[in-house]
Length: 345
Image 1: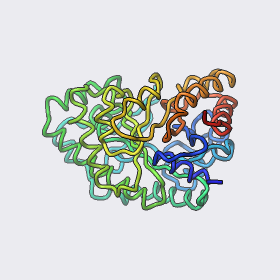
Image 2: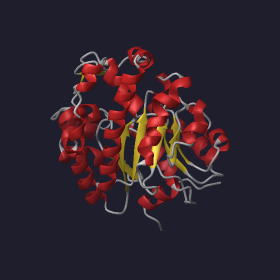
Image 3: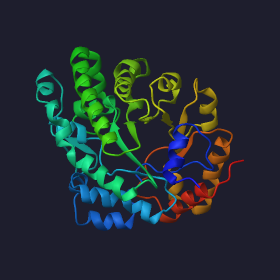
């Protein structure tokens, strides 16, 4: 009988397992009543920056759904810009607001990359606590934002549809843009290395705004820097790359050095599997809105993906993006139960 952690790591390595492991993006999300109760007492950023609170939030979904094979640390991708000196907050009207928009050389000069790891000690402390809590039974995941996605927020000054100012800056100020990506890439690399040293089994890189990058520029503006991060890691330290809406660049993504590619909802996993130029594990890809419907619908859609991927090793079941506040407890329960009781065809 293998542990849930072993099942996860075997799937990452494309080794045979009895069933796909399962974890969910944003699984410590706002749909959990225990999360909302804690959130009523503490602000989001307070919970992120307090190791004991981050540990509690991370463990909440694992207590409720015993079948989850991995915990992902409760944090935020924007801790990197904040550690560089560009703070973030949540706008009253919704979305992210950065302390300022980084649009010129003076803005880049304001960044202070030398102390990034020290400033993020609260994340590593949470991961050490989680490793102790989880022992060897369940996998522990860390995560980080990919350089392009972080640059989008930093240049734009916060959330924006399509990040037009970031795209314009990359085109009109290529030297400055490259300087910024060098700073971000170095910071993310050191952050990921330290997360592995703190006990995580894998790190997911979220290129959440990969779809906002023009396809002809994705190599130069994003993938080149992702490869640079992965190249600095030992080969036994797996990266899960989630490049949202970039399934059109499957070959380059497969050559990034990542051990696992996360697939967004709306693509057929078996088609991706057949098109891969090399054996890589795949993660995904139930649409988040499905867990806002009914348990029967969840079971049907989950089984469809499981059966589709049954002939191949190396499948981690997940959503095609993050859980939303409208997710239903009983639907998530149906998803986890369906995966954990599944028998491969």
